[in-house]
Length: 308
Image 1 (cartoon, rainbow, N blue to C red):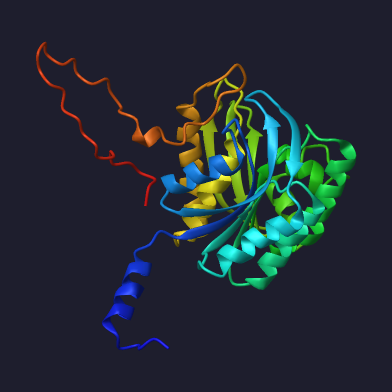
Image 2 (cartoon, rainbow, N blue to C red):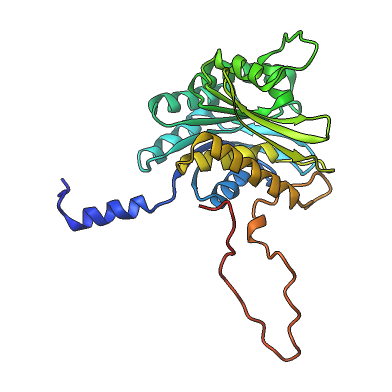
């Protein structure tokens, strides 16, 4: 038994308080780096959190499209989560694409065992998948994961067609309509993204069934991106784990995503990927080094607005 008066114990506690917050992430491996665990790792590190990755499967994809997905067995997913949770205290759980209803059940069971840990759940566009697989996955997500979810994140079109399939209004449902539909399954907050406004801006709204808590518009960029939703949800999860309140974390995560997209790059022949390390790039070209003069090497990271 440890001695509470032992100075080494106090030092250990101080060291732990200085640690970055830890986020347990259920997501797939994406070889393109557009989304999945690779995206989560960089986005979360950029805003000051440490990711604990639980690999749920792997995509077969390039920068243009997803061709297939190979899920892990649910026992393998459960064992990964159980093992790390017995060692590390987590501040938040993030759920990305986990591949099967069985893996969704594992996620739900994990979240149930840690009722005080918030859950950020991201629903990507699944149109690349078979219809029968989409239906089974969405049903399981709705029934198993949404009751455990604190913040649901998704594109307006994706969330609308999933949560309000029988919508009969003359206009598309608004963020509060979608938030109200999500709340019927236990979700208190929904971040609805990608709403195109008449002035060609993209609107993103955090809403509850009762009110809009945050709203940010950004200029629409002339490019097709892959990984924007994973970038946003990963940054939001990390900021919430760091202790930011929901509205402030949402505003900062949206700003981070917008700057990642603005600095986006095309590594292959497909879509543009967000540059999640835009803040680490020099803003101006280094001045030419005089002939015979040795260049000065600065290894310090530049200051920026998002990293905690």
